[in-house]
Image (cartoon, rainbow, N blue to C red):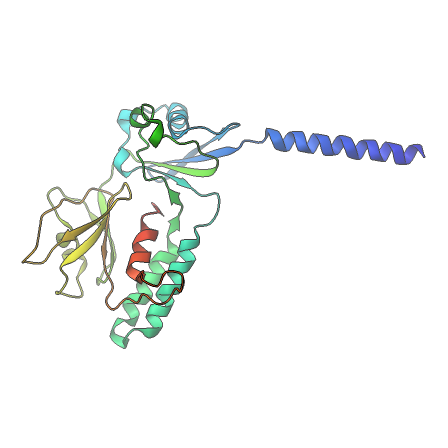
Length: 257
């Protein structure tokens, strides 16, 4: 009889201990990457605000806010996989299947490029503590698992889509999207606009035709996306009016460098 009492008591104590340990586990962890090198992981027992998480990381890195290139830095929620990546890959595979023979390889290359990329739910508001501390509207509480990608500089622009040579190019002052796309080898001369995803995640349309060209500089760390031709809108019944190009752009907004 005493054996069963002891077992029950032990089980109860173990349950209480496990519950207490679980409750004491940090609710938020932030992996900090500085210039593509993983440096530290910061844990918080209570939900921190964006400013607190960033400030804590800077303090542990012994780095000033003045040392960071905030425009190309970002904070990403990686608590769960980004479902949009799988949706995008499926749509790109369908596009490849339906594309003319001359375009199949370009759809395939884009799909392979995106397959190899990492993504997270990116916060699109500023993460510079000097900006977020004074405005609660852009300083939300966060929980779960996050990646804080900090950069001290940015010196490249990524070109993707309907070009011969996808990849990064050196950033240059006073250079527009058309120049970067030309350098990557545009596969069509009939485009009148390009999509630019600025490092903040803001999506812009830059006019590039001779009759509507309007100069806009591309920020270092940006992505220039050249729309793929004949992209369909009917691969997803839940998004009947959204083309594959639009889905790709939305995904690229959340790209982890």
